[in-house]
Amino acid sequence: MKTLFLVRHAKSSKDDPTLSDKDRPLNDRGRRDAPKMGERLAKRDVEPDLMLSSPAVRALTTAQIFAEELDYNAKNIVVDDRLYATTADDLLEVIHELDDKHKRVMLFGHNPEMSDLAHRLSDKIGDMPTCAVAEFEFDTKSWTAIGRQTPENAALHEPR
Image 1 (cartoon, rainbow, N blue to C red):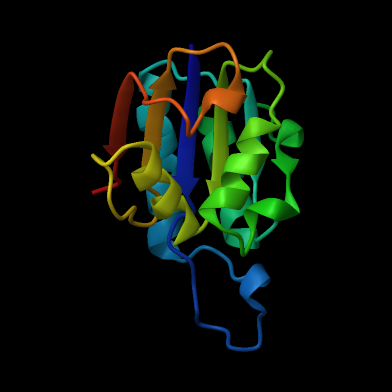
Image 2 (image 1 turned 180 degrees about the vertical axis):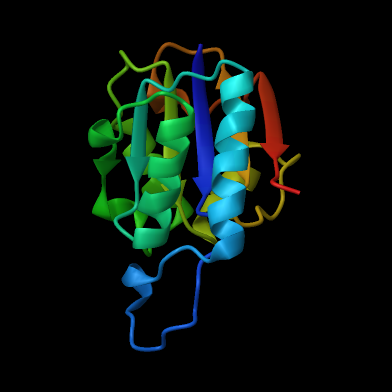
């Protein structure tokens, strides 16, 4: 089995117009929602083997907060530029390149590509609000099957 978690970054701040898009931090709601969502996963004993994040501050901060809640060493979060300003097809390419030794992987990124990919993997999932987690379980041994195979289970977890 392979379990894929697509995590849309928590709510970010647009208060400082001098910051580039990549440098926008989380706002108060984002700093509240991210630990709450991480804690929900921790209560279910979710233990990711690998966390990958967009380099954008809001995505990486969300990943770091989840890592803390899930007892995952934040130093092991892999920052991948391909998760920023991308497409669902590009996200699938990243997934297909994952080492098959990993059973549970979390990707932290942005919309619209997170929602697009989540919906492509399961029509049960539509738009992902900020800090939502789309969870998919696939009966496969290889990440290359993702997107070609229907998930055994699919769920959307939202902060509200």
